[in-house]
Image 1 (cartoon, each protein chain N blue to C red):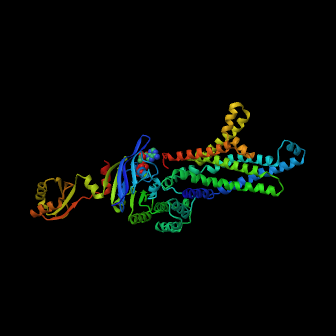
Image 2 (tube, rainbow over the protein chains, first blue to last red):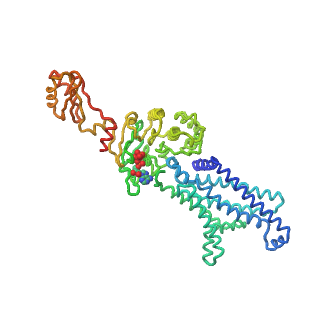
Image 3 (tube, rainbow over the protein chains, first blue to last red):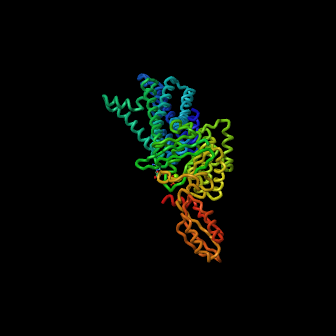
Length: 258
Length: 313
Ligand SMILES: Nc1ncnc2c1ncn2[C@@H]1O[C@H](COP(=O)(O)OP(=O)(O)OP(=O)(O)O)[C@@H](O)[C@H]1O
Ligand SMILES: [Mg+2]
C-alpha cells in the first residue's frame, strides 16, 4: 500500500519536471473557463429575451442548461487531455529502459500499475479543482443551481475521466513511443465519440448496442443528475478491466532491451 | 558458509533461441564471483533472471533460501542490481531519485535520509546530489546506478559490467568500492576486462552460448584447462646441453623437449609436462645429480585471457 503511494507521488511529480503539468493545468483551466463563461452569457441573454419563457415551458432550468452543456463539453475536452496525461505512463519508461530497474525493486506488478495510475488520477483531479470554483463563483453572482445535480454531474465527469485514463494507461503499456500512445488513445476516444453519435442515428438493437458500449451515453445520465447502478457499474468495470489488462501487459516482459 | 545465491538448472528461452541453458551456480557470503563470456553468452539474461526482471523458462533461483518466483518481494529486497545500460529517470534529481528508491526498497522513513546520505558519500556523489540525473556524465550516472543498487543494504549485489565506459580513475575507484563491499555480502559481476577479474574475484564462472563453460578459481581453471603446460629450465654451461636433454628425456611424462642457447653460458630448455604433476623438484634433483647447475625453472603462467581464449576454442 505504501509502495503505491511512493509510486503515485513519483508519477505525479514527474508531470512537473517539465512544463507539461503547468501547461496542461493552464490549458484545461482556460478552455473550461471559456466554456463556462460562454454558457452563462448565453443563458443570461436568452433568459432575458422571449426565449426565456420558452425554455421555462420546456422545463429547462438554469442547472440543466448551463451544467448539462458544460459537462458534455468537458467530456469532449477530455478526449484531448486524457491521451496527454497517459501517454508517458509506460511508453516513456519502455523507451528510456527504466523498467529494468523498476521491475527489480520489491514491487508487485499490481502495485506498479496502481501506483502509476493513481499518480495520473491525482494530476487529473488537480485539473478538476477549478471546476468547482466556477460553480461557486456563479452562485455568488446570483445564479440558482440545483447543487445535487451539479455534484452528480461532477462525479460523472470524474469517473469518466478515470475510465479514459485507464484506457490510455493500458495503451501506453503496448508501445515504446509516448507519441504513438497518445495518438492511439485519441483514436479510440474518437471511436467512442462516433459510437455515441451512431447510437442516435440508428435504431433497434443496433442503437441499443451502441448505447451500451459508448461511455458517453452512460455519462449523460450523470450530467442529468441521475445515478443508476448500471451506469456507475459500467465505469467501474471499464476501469477494472483496463487496469487488469495493464497488469497482464507488463507481466509479459519479453520485449527486447528493456 | 551461508549460500546467498543459488541458481539451480535455470534456462531462458526467447522464441526459439536458448539464451541461458541449464545454468547452475551458487555464491556464498563474502565471495565476489566474476561472470565472463563472449558477447551474447547470456550473462545479462542470467542476471536479469536472478534479479527478478523476468522469470526463467525453467529452473529455480533462491536468494538466501527464498525462491524469487514464489516470494518475489521478499527476495528482491535482498538484491541490489546495476544493469548493463544504466537507465535512470533523467528528469529527477539525484537525491530525489535515491529517496524514491530507498522508499520502494522498504527503507523506513526515519532512516531514509541517513541511508541516502551514506550512499551518496560512498559513491562520491556529494557534488552532484542536487543535479538532474539526465545532465550527469556517464561515469556519474554509473555511480548513481551503483548507489541505488547499494540502497537497502542488499545481501546480493549483481553488477552487469560496472566499469564499462569509465575513465581509468573512476574504474579504479569503482573497483575499490566493489572490493570494499564484499564483506558479509555476495557479489556477482560481469565484465570483459579480464585483469579486473583476477584482481577482484575469488571465483570465476565462464559462460558460452548460455552454458557454463568452466568455473572455479583462476588457478583451478588453468589446471583444469591445460592437460600439459610449458616448463622452462635454464641451466649454466653450454657443454652440458646434450646431457641435460638426456636427463629430461629420462623423466617420464615430459614431452617436446627443445633447447635454445641464450646469452653467455646459459641454455634454455623447454618441455611440456602434464598439469597434475609437480615436476620442479624432480627436474632440479636429477639435473643436479649430473652436476648441472640449474639457474631457474619456470612454469609458464597462463593469463586469464589465454585461458578464456583456449576455453572458447
Ligand atoms: N529480450 C530478448 N528477446 C530475445 N532475445 C534476447 C533477449 N535478450 C537477450 N536475447 C538474446 O539472448 C542472447 C544472450 O544475450 P545477453 O544479453 O544475455 O548476452 P551477454 O552475455 O550479456 O552479452 P554482452 O557481453 O554483449 O553483454 C543473445 O543472443 C541475445 O540476442
Ligand atoms: Mg550483457
